[in-house]
View 1: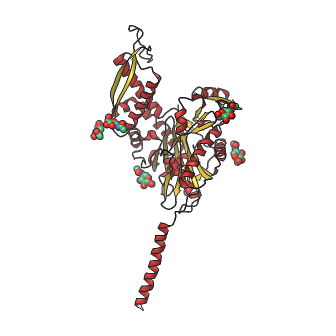
View 2: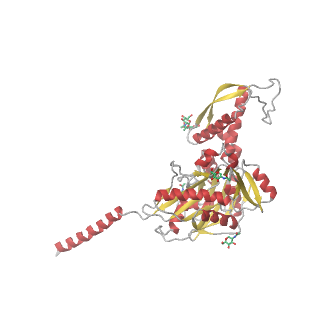
View 3: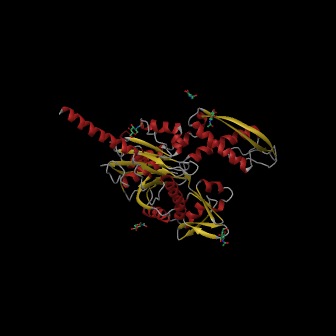
Length: 451
Ligand SMILES: *[C@@H]1O[C@H](CO)[C@@H](O)[C@H](O)[C@H]1NC(C)=O
Ligand SMILES: *[C@@H]1O[C@H](CO)[C@@H](O)[C@H](O)[C@H]1NC(C)=O
Ligand SMILES: *[C@@H]1O[C@H](CO)[C@@H](O)[C@H](O)[C@H]1NC(C)=O
Ligand SMILES: *[C@@H]1O[C@H](CO)[C@@H](O)[C@H](O)[C@H]1NC(C)=O
Ligand SMILES: CC(=O)N[C@H]1CO[C@H](CO)[C@@H](O)[C@@H]1O
């Protein structure tokens, strides 16, 4: 009988093992809902993979994890993402970017005029809403939500190519400060792209979820999002598994471009010192800007980096004419000689050039703590979002202020899309824990801006 028992046991074990193995070889359940980060400068899309519990950020046809939020219109064609970016220089009037800054937003005539000065494309005022005027072989206006829909359509197609099936449902993130109208127009953009939006989630909440903070015991999470041109700080409070935004503040004129500008100014001063003049050729200045961006990125890992670039230095028109040093006004002519400009930039120098800007990051951080009636020691986790948070000095400023390290293990450029994809997994029912919502919407919170 003992032998019979053993046989039965092993039969059961074999069945269990077979089941386990079969599960390994059965096709994975396919994600049904995609998560979309429709960013101001870049967008990305991801899915939650129920089999592994991981998020897959879906690449475009060239393998990029995110695509520029750019749409370029030509005779009879529309180019989106990197294809749109390629046309930005040759087709500037018909290449629209930053559309998210206009979506669902109403402006005074004066505001819209000052906004349109910043862009090479033409902005039209339609009863307070912005529209973009396109002039190819035909002339027409497109809305910010139409631009959004073209970006979303591209992300939808990338997902369909990756998953090998049609996709029609999504979760999307928006800035925490978006009001109901801006949220509605974002949903409208998705509808135009053939996507049904199952849930709209705040970007800081998504970033916190990318770190799994919805699953662990934390109450107060501070999210610092520092991108190319803006800083957004949000204080989240978790109540019964749900995130509530307690306070928001920011600086809409602080970001990576400002750090580049400081370095650029330093190089101009160096060139002026060495050659008595500055490069004036458009494509050389463009290459110099690219070199400055590369050096900044390099300095996040290395102690120093070298700029080496060949430039055409014009001769000064009048060697005796004094230069207005303090205003950085240099007098140039087009006659010039070719030089190889080479200079080493240390991380220390980069930090010194930007010291005051880096310190400014603490202003909105202090503001949200004040508005949230929280002492800095009560913040449980600090989450960093946006490429500029890779800068070691910025991490140090934040670490020193709180006396603890921020959470940095997730790629700061992908934290939002990863969080949205997790939320899409929850909404799509592929999350093991049956939580359906992770956010308490709040309607009356305003963001304080420091300029
Ligand atoms: C503009 O060009 C496209 C493609 O070349 C063509 O399909 C369209 O009919 C043209 N429109 C006009 C008004 O000529
Ligand atoms: C947003 O959409 C909802 C649902 O369609 C509607 O009830 C609400 O009035 C809209 N709000 C604004 C400000 O457009
Ligand atoms: C960078 O410089 C710091 C001090 O300035 C030094 O401690 C560190 O070892 C250097 N790192 C490398 C990789 O050279
Ligand atoms: C970064 O700078 C270091 C030091 O100048 C250099 O050795 C390295 O090749 C650079 N890397 C990149 C990716 O530019
Ligand atoms: C500094 C750091 O990494 N902190 C936290 C990041 O988030 C996880 C939760 O997912 C914590 O366990 C870490 O301690």
